[in-house]
Image 1: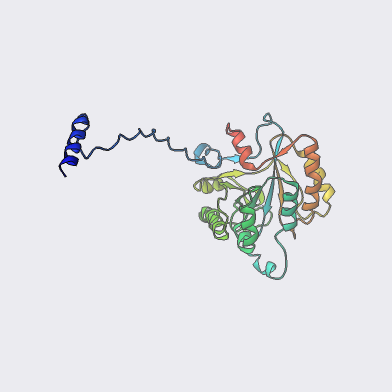
Image 2: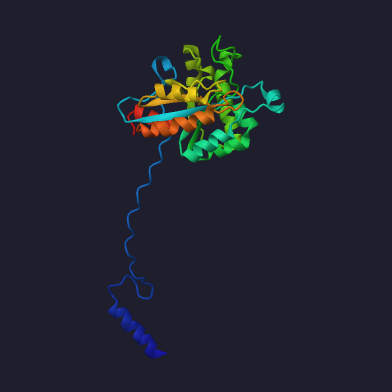
Length: 280
């Protein structure tokens, strides 16, 4: 055993520059500097509250940012219409959604919480389809002002809760990321209503083109009205309710190819709001 010990000693002498004989580890290569953490993706664009903390109202994008147009569809169902749905009235319109998919048209669906409860499977498939985005149309579809097309009225102290209840219904239906956009039932609002919903962080979204499809049966007339009204940056309001807007699907099949022929491209509301706040 003497020779091996001497050889080991010799190796230690030769390695005197090492930190310690028998315990030295080969130097490790320097680790690369850690990559900077990726930035958190920005959420959907919204407009800052206006004077007095009132929710801002968006009706259309700037007219100078190209030929973009947003088709929006109100999926209306009022809180007290459950018995009518149980009796067979249809407040959904799956044929319209199928047509939008076939035509590859992105769109924003303003959905009531009560609609999501009645049609959770449809709400979920719309909310998870990247072609669409779901936004808030209240839970109850009751008006946020007095004298709004005969709708029942939400008391002022329940307005915020009505908006939040809709988001709860969306989550329960499986919609992963409903947008922070709110459309007043009937389009009716005042300063009191804007103040009430501002605390939820939403941007109020109206429109500048009325499709006129509510209770209409003439699809050609609806299409003409939309085509005559659209300008760059427009927001078009239509409906996703078969019983109350039976001509909408046929109108959309005429509207889409004609607007494309005119050089328009279809976008969701979030893109138009991004444009309005200095985004894309």
